[in-house]
Image (cartoon, rainbow over all chains, first blue to last red; front, side, top):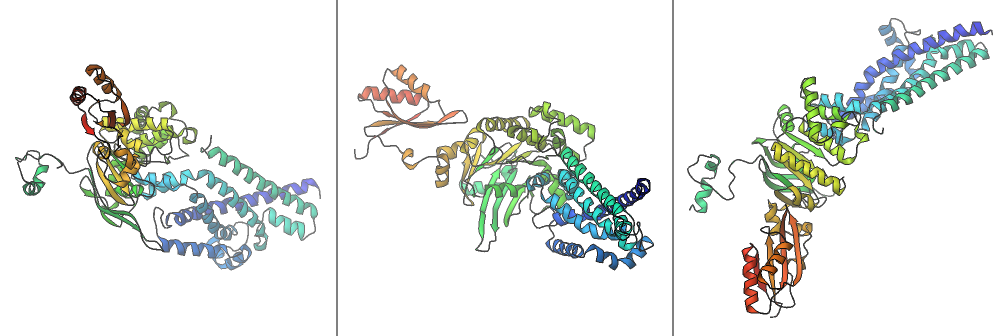
Length: 220
Length: 365
C-alpha cells in the first residue's frame, strides 16, 4: 500500500484513539478519584473511619473490576444506548470504557494516597484542620507525584482497552489494525497501526515519568 | 493559722484573688491550664488488655515547661496525644482552660487545637510544599487573608532563624532546620500551649541544645505553656520547671524538677536519673564530712574558697554533683580533719555558704 494512502488512515485512527482515551480518562478520574479518597479515609484509624462503608465500597469496586471489558461492553449495550444515544461507534464506546476504568482508577488512587505518612495527617489534625481541608490541602497535594505516576499507568490501560472498540463498531488504531489490517490481511496496516499504538503508549509513559519527577519535591 | 480541714473547706474560695483568707503553699491561685483527671487508656488485645495509662492525674499551669519522662512503653506518648484528642482515652477527663476536651463537639475541638499546637519527633512537614507554605498552612485553614498570612510567615521564620529558607522544600533541610520549621508552623495559630512529642529525639546533641533553647525562648517571651515528653533526663534538667515520671502506665512521681531531682522517691525516677543505690549513700572507710549541694552554691569554687579562707586542707573522697538549671545539686564526701578546731571552723565556713554539712562515720564505728 502506498504511503500517501496509509498515512491518512493512521492519522484518523490515532485521532480517534486519543479522543476515546482522553474523554474516558477524564470521566473515569472524575468518578475514580473521589472513590479512591473514600476508600482511604473511611478505613479504620484514618481521618473518617467508617469500616462497614469501606468494606461495601471495596466489594462493589472489586465486583466491577472483575468483569472483563469485552463482556462488560456487551452487557452495557442497553445502558450505553440510553446514555450516549447509540450503542456503537467511537463516541458511544466512551461510556463502557468509563464504567470499566473508574473502579481501576479508584484502586490506583487508593494506592497513591496510602503512601502518605500518617504523621503528616496527624499534624494537620493537631492544627485544627477539618477533614475536607486535610483531603484537599494535605492528602491529595502530598500524593501528587504518585498520582501522576498512577495516571500514566491508568491512561495506558484505557488506551489498550480502546483497541477493543472494533467489537462495538468504534474506530481508532486498534480497530484499524483488526478490521483493515488483520481481517483484510493487510500486514502493512496491521504493523503500522500497532507501531503507532506503541509510540502513543511510550509518549504517555515517558511524560508520566517526567512529570512525576518534576512534581516531586521530596529529594531535591 | 488554719488547720487542714478548714483549708480544704476554703479551697474553692482561694481561686478568688481578693479572698479574705490568705492561702499559701500547694494551693493553686488559679485553676490549672491543663488538668488531667483519672486518665486511663486500655488497648484491648487478643491475649488480654494492655493498660497504657492507669488513672493519671496531672495539673499543668500556665507558663510551665512541664516534662513528662519515662522509658519507651511507659505510656508518655499516649498521654500527650490524649491532650489534643489525637488519641481517645478509655476513661478520665482532660480539661483545657476548664473545658472537657473529650466531650467537646468537633468545631470546638478544632478551635481548642489551634490554641494547643504540637510538634513531633518526625517533624511531619508537608514534603511537597515550601517552608513558607508549610508555615502558612495553619493560617490558610483559619481563613487568614493572604497578605496578612505572608507577613506573619515572614515574622515567624525570623523568630526561628530560617528567613533565608522560605522557598526551600523540607527535603533540602537538616533535621534541626525541619524542627524549626515545625515550631514556626506551630506558632502560626498564636497558641497558648505547645505539645512536644519527643521533639528532640531524632536530633544530635548540638541540635537538641539549640531546639531546647528555642523552646525556652518561646516559653519566656510568648508565655506559651510547654508540655514535652522525652526519655532523656538531660532535656528535663535543661528546660523544665516541673516533671512527671511515668512508669508502666502509672504516674511514679511528679513535682518541681528541683524537688524530684533532689528527693527522688520512685524506682523509675532513680533509674532515669542514673542514681545507683550505692551512690545515694556513699559510705566512707574513715570518719568524713558529707556536704550537700542543693542549688544554693556552685560546686568546685566554694570548696577551694573555704579551704583558702579557713586554712584547712580539704581532701575530697568522692563527689556526685550534677548541674541543674545552672545550679549544683548532689553531695560530696571530704575527709574529716583530725583536729577538733579545724573541723569546727571548716564546718562553720561551709554552712556560711549555704551548704548542709554533716559528719559521717564508717559502718561499725
